[in-house]
Length: 502
Image 1 (spheres, helix red, strand yellow):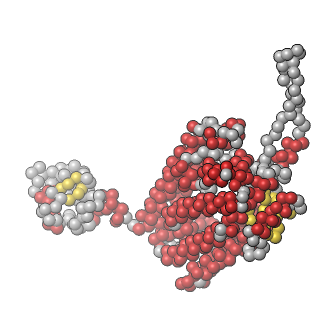
Image 2: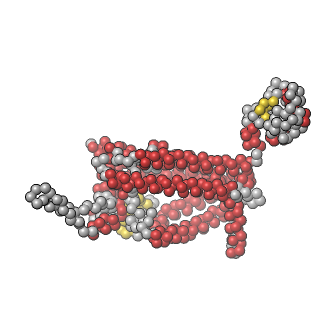
Image 3: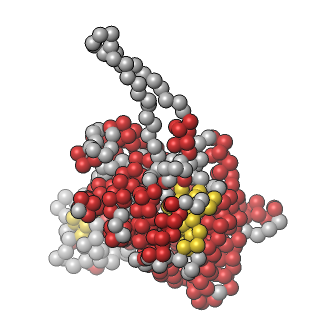
């Protein structure tokens, strides 16, 4: 039994939310019965651990922290690995609930916005607007259920010790094997998925193995060597992706000689962009989404245009052009009626040449304004910081114990725990900051296209691309602020509107 004389007479001690005066502790109560949570009939001198909270009983009569509630006491006295595990799990669910709230707000916008906004009335038909709205509703429903499943799955894996179990199973299999540790057709989807898996494994396995080896032999400064290794790998992948990896999935053909190519080369020359080649990629077999990008280092820059971006190359337009017109008769009222012939009009996909140049003016604005270099610098600074913190934390055994690794501390598991779980709060903050920066870059690139005299064409191109990509033009402000790396359509149009009218 704790010595009650250890407590001053002037203080009141907390017990399961109840307060016991010092004389009660010393056995001087008038009632002479237990005033603690168990409500037993024993006198204070006979109280034991069932009358006292475990945290106070085990403290041996030391003075408790009056400012800390019971749950705080239990949290503070729990093992470090338990606190780490609970913190990771709670933060994961906090992020999920935050994302679910944002998704609910945006879904409410999809449900309630059933008419084309006045700003888009002259340029967006109600059929396209409704198609986009229903598409986004389906996407949000799928995202909700898939997100809930992923969160529950991750929680069950963590609570049931799934990570150490899978690590043990993989080790057994490895030892027995003799070595150490949006589509057009369903067929196309599976074929593409298999190729992605093979290519990913061919890159990921050797890179991960070399990274683990560098960490193992790098000594105290291994984080510097690991960072330099990942830097080299990223630069190599950027260099070879469009020439060797992307063609495994899509067909790239040089843009034929003609007016569009001449105008692209002239615009590149005007802003000193070292263009060497222009390609068209057959992205239409994968998706109807349109895009354009450039790649390459130093004096070897190349531009890639999706065929869905080009009105003259879109497969959808070719299919429509092959369909014969449908003659219809409209009955009239005078003298036997009036006959008129009307051919059905197909909606075209893609942009005209002037609009394609405006889109490229925006993309080249990212290069001219140094956005690409800035993103690379930010990425590498973040990578270096993460590897440095990994070097600081990898020796902490309690991190491994929190996830069930009490006897061993595998480096690969350390990478998983630290980068995926321990860094998750930092990653959320960084992701938001980069999203804000990306939107700022997009507005700057639009402004650059303005300076090239492309405001009017970029205005119409953004509307067409939004239609082709089934983008919904109305967004909840909080959802877009947190998620959108590009400004919402209406905000971009508003920024271009004044110049367009002038």
